[in-house]
Length: 325
Image: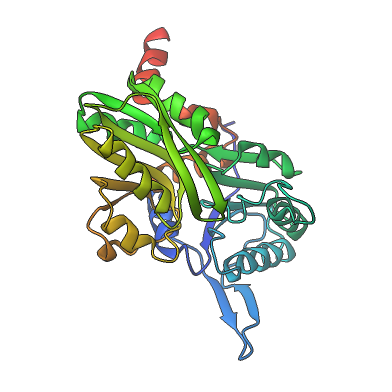
């Protein structure tokens, strides 16, 4: 007898609705009815309009600011658990609070661990996310973690640009591993931006380790916040002889004057994913690539107990595996 899998139902919080609709469409279904209501004092309530009994439920919501987005996710998970859902996956394209992953000074919270505890306690069976600020955050969870990578979206796009004299840049020492992976796959050289912060979101000094003269540079990072680092890096690289500077960042936080900083920078373009909604009209330099097909495939594989690691393969790696068979 062919294997039978539990029915899949996909729901969305209020701030990730546009992405969730694309994911559901790519999966081949429609979003289920999840009502997020607020009392007059701002208190949030979540309820399902459809029965979820016995279903594999996937709730899509990025937990970017404000924290209402996190609270919506927690309440939606709790409601699904109390409605007898078979399996509950929190699909969190952008995992907020990930930058608070350790005690870097005395008497501070480790917010990413707290959020992991909250999600686990709420009743999730699994979490699916993309490009965590620090991969070791996966260890904060007591449930399986599917950690998707934007590289399978970004690298084919970069190849399609046919950029000559390409150099990949890490925005800081912590991003060296990610940048080295891109450089290896794109057969490009690697440079590193060595920066020192005086305060959060404020860079005191920056220098480039490596040669960018006569090169077309692509900076790869997981988050673009205020855009200050990218703007300063672009200035520095162009002053040192780079021909162009682009940036590929997974999560477009773009807080404060982020949009203005990117628009007024010397970057050729900023390419991001749709893990956080982007106000594209605020900067002509921002290009958005969709993560919906990747998340839809991941949901399909989770439901059918398939491989998630197979989704990390680049097109030529897929072709090579087929030829081996």
